[in-house]
Image (tube, rainbow, N blue to C red):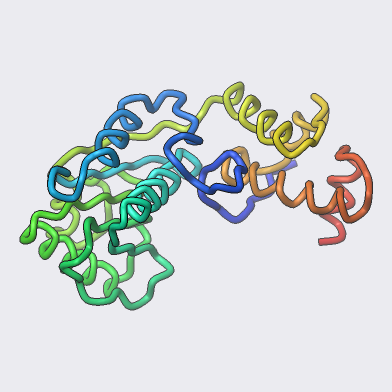
Length: 231
């Protein structure tokens, strides 16, 4: 059976606090994690204005890191400009922003590319950093040339998804934190019948948790099949 595609969500481990650097599973992405820790740890006056671009397949953690950085800056009392593919009309650049964050740039429409380029130029003018993410390396992005080349100007990191054993470990840990028991057969079923990216698996776990509570049943393969038939 083909894996069932599920809506992509931010890469996290199911904690109520949402995406943070501390709950990001590093795996093979140590260099980008070290860079982001330095980036977040700096102040607005000391943070380097050199742009950072993260790229990789879905579920590799790009959006998680962007949202974690946004939240960290908010906790510092700073505001940021945020643009992703769901923001159809980008607002005007605000010089009060401490940084500009551009997510899923590979999906940008012409209007979004225009807005992102305007933000990028203004951010550089006032020495504000740009943190961006997309599915492809800068040279492969089907974007206007001036935006594409700027995305590749500074720090560029290729993010690699977690291996299957790492995904299993994260899924088990998230289930344990919810007080859920996932047997090996259930874990195998989840990993072979559904999308394997961690974001989708975490969404599936959330759905299963809610359905199990609603039906007052343990999470088993029959329960998963019942949920898919009734939701």
